[in-house]
Length: 349
Ligand SMILES: NC(=O)C1=CN([C@@H]2O[C@H](COP(=O)(O)OP(=O)(O)OC[C@H]3O[C@@H](n4cnc5c(N)ncnc54)[C@H](OP(=O)(O)O)[C@@H]3O)[C@@H](O)[C@H]2O)C=CC1
Ligand SMILES: CC(=O)N[C@@H](CCC(=O)OP(=O)(O)O)C(=O)O
Image (cartoon, helix red, strand yellow):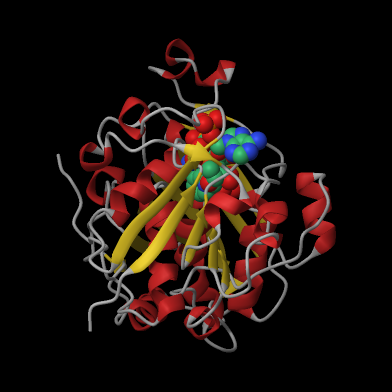
C-alpha cells in the first residue's frame, strides 16, 4: 500500500537537518512539507545546501509550532535545549523524532550534571539494534509517537560493547573508549576550534577527563545491555575529515571468557541486523566504507596479554549517527518496513 506521509524538518539549514532532507528525498512514502531554520529563515534551501538539488528553490520557514503542526511527522534537528518547548506545543498525534539530546537521558541527575539546563524527561531511545539484558529496544519504538535519536558517539560505541556485556563476558565497571569524529559532528555554528586552519592536518582531544556529555548516555545504554551499572572512561578527539566516527572501545573480560565466546555473542546479536555489520575476521572498520550509509561496521578481537576486548566501530555521524537513525525511527513509528528509504551502501574510495 502506498502511503503519503507529510514530514517537516525543523533545523533544515543545519548539518543534521540537511542530511535528513537528503535521505527523505529518497524515501518513497514521504512528502516533504515545511523545512525550517532560524537565522537562515527566508533563504532558499539551495543557498544553504546546494547538494539538495531537487529542492533548491524551497524557502526555509521560521521554526514555530504553527509551521510544524499539520504534518504527520516532525523531525527536530535543533541545538540542545530547543526541542522540549517546541515539542510540547505539537499535537499528541504528530510523531516527533528529536535528533537533539533533550529526551535521551532517563536520569535527571545525569542530565543536570552534563547539560546544566532544566530536565525535560525521556522518550523511547531510537537505537532499535541495541542488545538489552531484558526486553527489546525495537518494541519500544514500534508505533511510538515520541522518539529520542541517539547521540552520534553513543551509537557506534554502544553497539560495539553491548553484545559482550549482555552475554556476561565483559566487566561493565572496566571500560575505556577513545573515539575520533569528523568536524560535522560539531554542527555548523562558527567556533574557533573548528576553523579550517585549526583542524586541517591536526587531531586533537576534547572533553578529556570524563567531561563529555555523551558519557552518561553511553553508560545508560551499556547498563541496560549488562543488566548492571556500567562505568566508562570516554575520550573524544576531533579528526580532520568532514564526516565519520571511528571508535575504539575496550573492556576487561570476565573470568573464563574467551575470544571464541565473544565472537559468537557478537555474531548472534547482529546476524539479523542489516545495519550492524560484524566484518569478516581480519577486516577492520574504516569511516570511508560507511560514508552516507545507514550502517555500523564493527570488528572485535581480544588482546590476550591484557585480557581485554578491543571493539572498533565506524559510522557516518550524520547518517546512522543521526539522520539515518531518525528515518529508521520514523519507519518504526509508522509501521513501515524499517529500512524504507535507507541505503546500506557506502561511497568509496
Ligand atoms: N552533527 C551531528 O553529527 C549530530 C547532531 N545531532 C544533533 O542534531 C541537532 C542539530 O545538530 P547540527 O545539525 O549538527 O547543528 P547545526 O548547528 O548544523 O544546525 C542547527 C540548526 O538549528 C537551527 N537553530 C539554531 N539556533 C536555533 C534557535 N535558537 N531556534 C531554532 N532553531 C535554531 C539552525 O538554524 P540557522 O542555521 O538557520 O540559524 C540550524 O538549522 C543537535 O541537537 C545535535 O546535537 C545529533 C547527532 C549527531
Ligand atoms: C565533533 C563534535 O564536536 N561532536 C559533537 C557530538 C555531536 C553529537 O552527536 O551529538 P549530540 O547530538 O549529542 O550533540 C560533540 O562532541 O559535542
